[in-house]
Length: 199
View 1 (spheres, rainbow, N blue to C red):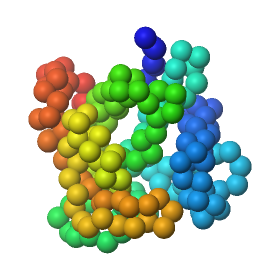
View 2 (cartoon, one colour; view 1 turned 90 degrees about the horizontal axis):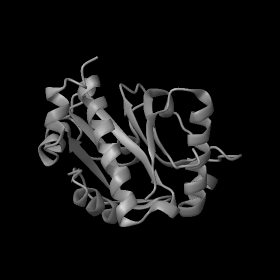
View 3 (cartoon, rainbow, N blue to C red; view 1 turned 30 degrees about the vertical axis):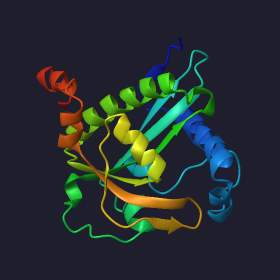
View 4 (tube, helix red, strand yellow; view 1 turned 90 degrees about the vertical axis):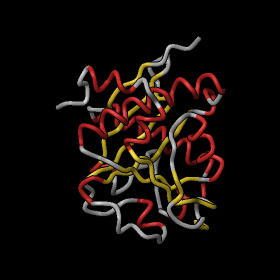
């Protein structure tokens, strides 16, 4: 069994490794995206990263093997809103975030390892959502990944029609309600009882 280390990325050296890992995954899965946005080099980052908290999983060799980011209070908007059109008037800006760059190294995409990683992602994100007062979180998701996240008790809901992204393929604009995430994962009640989410 692989022992993963999960942590918030707080130093530049590790963040650079996260960006390098993201480039590696995108080069494998969405090479056209890298070409279209004009990314040169071996790191992938964008204008939203400055307004995000980053999370990584490290393998036993201390190499990045999974990532996710939570964008919030972004003055440049959010990837989902900036990529497609839907009615976003019901989401208050100061209670809104977006989870993206949920990447897992292909070596660890087994059912068992992915479940371990997603469970850690859920708990970390839930704590951050509570800390930041985020009540709903966007996701710009492929249909297959949307189904997978629901299996792992991350109940995203489409909030608009499926969109043909010229670089990323068919995607739904989706929303995840923090309270519904908690309901789907009763173990999060302990986090509230322990007040782990309080600043």
